[in-house]
Each structure stands twice: as C-alpha cells, then as structure tokens.
Length: 416
View 1 (cartoon, rainbow, N blue to C red):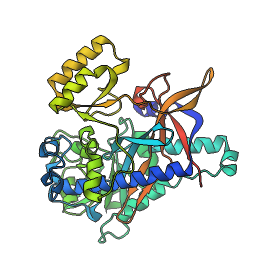
View 2: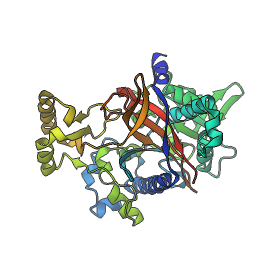
View 3: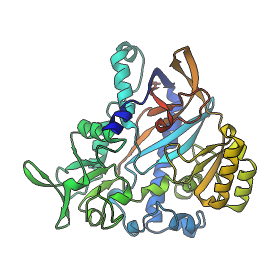
View 4: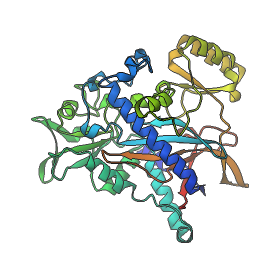
C-alpha cells in the first residue's frame, strides 16, 4: 500500500550518532528505573490505587484520563507485566546532561528502522564494525521473542506467539511484517482470530490452533468490539474476556497508554520516588499542566517562549513551538488553551544537542533525540544498546518526528 511505501522512505543519514560507554551506562540505569516504576504505577492504578490515596496524583487525573481503562481494574497480567515493550525518548540538554522527553508505553514503534539502519551501515562499511568496539543490536527480535515467551502461563506448552496488526494500510505495517518475519511467528489480523470455548484460535493449513501470546500493534479501543469500541472492525469479539480469563497474553497490556499521557509524564519523578523510594536517575523536562489555573496564566503570558503539546498528542501534531510561531498563531493557540486547558501541557524550549548530518553542502548540525527500546519480562529489564536516533533534517527545526519531515541515524554505543 502507499502508506507502507511511505514508511520505508523515511530519510536515513549515513553519519552515525556515537555514545560513549559511560554515557550509555547512565542512560541504561535511568531507563530501567523509569520503566520499572511505570510498571508499578500501572499495576497500582488498576488495583490498590495507593498513589491516589497517598495524594501523589489527583484521582481525576486518572479516572478522567481517556487512556485509563476501567475494564482492567482488579486484574493483574501474568507475571505482573503491563509494559512488555517500551520506547523512552531521550534528549541531551548539555555535555553530560540527558532528560526524558516522552514515554511510549502503549504501542511503541520505530524499532525496524533501528535494525535496518544498522544493517545498512554494516553492509556499506563492514570494516568499521571490525575495527571499532560497537555494541550489537541485531538480537532484538530474538530477545523480544524470548521476553514474550518468558511472560507465558506455566500452563502453555510451547506457546504459540503471533503479532496482531491493523493491516496493510497502517503506517507501521512494514515494521509489523518485518518483526513477525524476524521472530518466525504468524502475522495476523483480528479477523484471522476467533474465540471458542474461552480460547483464542486461528485457522491454519494444518487445522485450528490455539494462540497463546499476542504481541499486539493495535490500539486498545480496537482490540475487541464487545469490550471496547463496538464499531471496531480490526479486533476480535471476545478477545478481552479471554485475556482476563488467562487464556491468552496481550503485550502490551490494554490500558498502558495512560503512561504515555503527557500530564501523567509530569508525575513520573514522584512515581519513581513513591514506588521505588529512589531519586530519579534521569530527570524530566519541566512541565506545566495547563489545567492548573496558575500554570495556565504563566503559560499564556509566556507562550512565545514555550512549547505547548496536546496531552494525548503524538507524532508532533497539535503542538505549538512558541519561538517559531507568528503573532496570529500565538493568539489563536491562546484561545484554544483558554477554551480547553486540560488538553495541554507546556514545556520550555530546549537547547537540544546537535549532531552532524550529510547535506548537499557538506556536514551540518541538526537537532536529534534518541528512542531506546526496552523489553520487560518477569526476570529482567533489557535495554537495547543504542536505539533509534531521530533527526530534524530542516535547519533550525526542533521536530524530529518522521511524520513532520524528520529522518533517522544509526546509533553506536561503544564498548568500554
């Protein structure tokens, strides 16, 4: 399909982004801490809700959040794992300073670019990988498969794993197909599945088989028309009941999207302190929740200096970059803020680090961020060394999203 082709044409820059071993050690420890705390948070808000009772997060920020799924209350997934796969967006704000820009705990994407970028570099410059101590990332599909298997019920013998995709018109379909192929598992759509006697089944050339673990790349609301959006044509009727009954594992768990929420993001340092009793190893970017009256006044008065994002936004859409906005754009956005303040958060405009890219006129600096991918199983949290470096290809741009004209780079983590 056209969107599939578009996804594969995201620009790739040949100059790798390099991280020293000590830099990576700091990032890896901070990411593991953060993802562990997020998993504790998800388990708590769908069960005991101690963080609400303690007054750390107001109840309305949970219950009124559109990503909160009441259907998950009173249920804990196998192994207590909600976020099997996480992407954590990191920015460098100083020579030795890193901050977390965003957490992607629902359906993180982009790992196929990370793997393809490395494959391209190894093919074009094989000698660099023999003379430099660069940590490998090629095991990601194998590690993902192992991580999913480790989360399986003890009642599953040789569990059958499948990847659930919305189909060929989804912008990440190439990645779905790529990962299924690399893991040696079935790539399926909701219409391929049926729920019979509480079991999730698929019809194959060899007959009907049970499906035990589903790595789902479909948003929560489309998973099951009986439990979520009744108009969904992408899901499987009865899938969520089978999940709650323990007949199938869904990775990631439904309801994890609340940890993606940019208002909840502002609480992550407190979430780490509350569940782990530690100070955050990686700081957040200062964030003003616009539903707070004093915050809203500050944001409107300083709109020309701030970045304002939709709480549930993604892909760089619906955001305002104050320093780059016209007076009319600022006035229009100010009206939107006043009309619906709870929909937005604001952050300072960061002096993001730059790395060189190859342009028609030679090397030039461009702003970047980094999305390491994290795999969570009952026994360990694994962070793939490096991740996907996204780069703003336009001179002066701070927006690295591929949907907004950004590109990607290979990321080299050096051995000590």
